[in-house]
Length: 208
Image 1 (tube, helix red, strand yellow):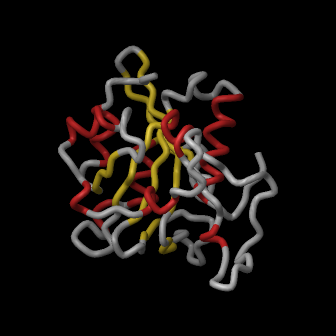
Image 2: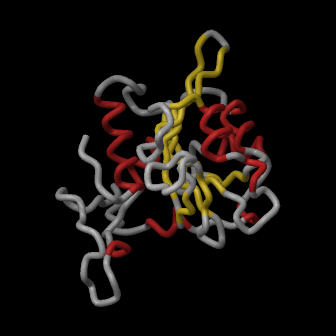
Image 3: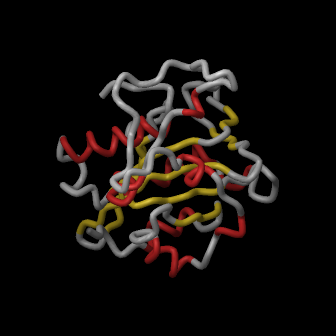
């Protein structure tokens, strides 16, 4: 799988690759795409390859990861696929939360992270990007786009990236309803740092 500088398209392609190679369920029902951002669009994360310090600290405007959530004989097996992290690929969910997110670091500040969780089968049908965010005001490329054609949603939508990135604390609902709604909402559900460690444990298992 060739990587671009576009984190959301990389994760889109990663989901397809995990499905194609049999690492994920055939329909990707055990995969979740997670956009990390906040109202300030200032997202501190650690163990990022782009970081310039020993601990890999960087502040993104937004970041996208894939979480694989499986159940085996009652055991919860959750892993994080972060193409931009220097942690193991994939990382156990608990390790990633502890090392890369470090929830208590910014929990009561404007840098507190929010997480938009979208079920991968829904995301693969619904996501679209015309890559306009990769251009400057004059229309020149800030970074070279992927060589393949822009991603268009099944319904013909050509760009909805902002719908995934934009999120605020008011978007967070109760844990029980979100654990159900994630399978049906086009743009998933938004969870906060306090709910995130509990969210995937609350899921009943793969849905079609």
